[in-house]
Picture 1 (cartoon, rainbow, N blue to C red):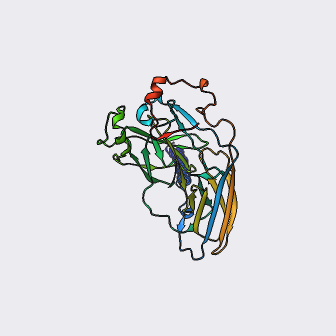
Picture 2: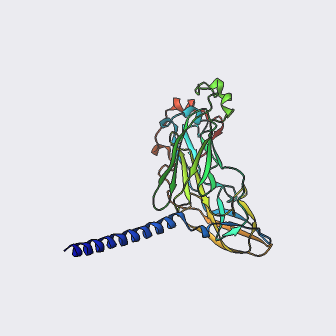
Picture 3: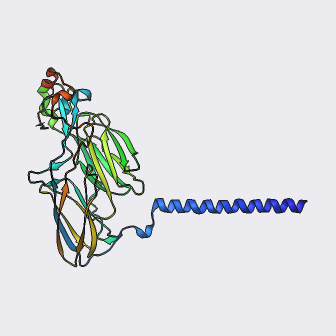
Length: 329
């Protein structure tokens, strides 16, 4: 009887040990999948025969309508209304497009480069809250990199950052963005309006952008002023650029090879890419045409007819003075 009990207990212990081994193996595999394989990480090497990639990005079609925000429904309407349409509305246009279709402030990057030049150690990316805007509108970061956010305004802001993908959003950080205490406080006093142009930096807030594996896009908004937004893209190699006022971009010291050239803009939902082959010490010109998205892109799109929007009283319109910029719809 004792021998039988011993054999049963031994068999049960062996089964439990086997289950534990299987669980440990699964957990180890999941951790490896989440953390990524270090062997696949980008490697810095000396590029002896690197080439140059230049090009131009244009938007083809009608530029999408901007977003509209009723300043009366949000805080700091007098200060933030210094950029407005003169009717009490703040306009946010995510698409920066020149007269000939020059698509500005879009990110262009190469996929498929595992070895190459080092990342530019130009410091931590910085986003400024200035005139109730987040500047720049698009930011490029490395994975698990810290960004600095600074308040240049005489009003409080609240930074809320989310990673976003088809899997849904996840909060990255949510912290107040204090202002410089030396700013004047009476924002409705128009006689002191000139003082508000002296932007003074508040305490810098450093936050870690720790994106989940497989996610590369994050968005930052202000919890007080809904029209303040900034988008970021996490890159895996240093071969990227942002288009300038002419829609042009350039990448240098690219290892010879064939890669995918990708164009990214937060409100372009389709993948825009093309294949490029760069020879030793060669120069390649790549012009990319992006079809303008059609249809309604956001719920608060500016309407053609003012009667479909919430009205702002005329007295309030007169008080909200667009001293810096009178925006068009």
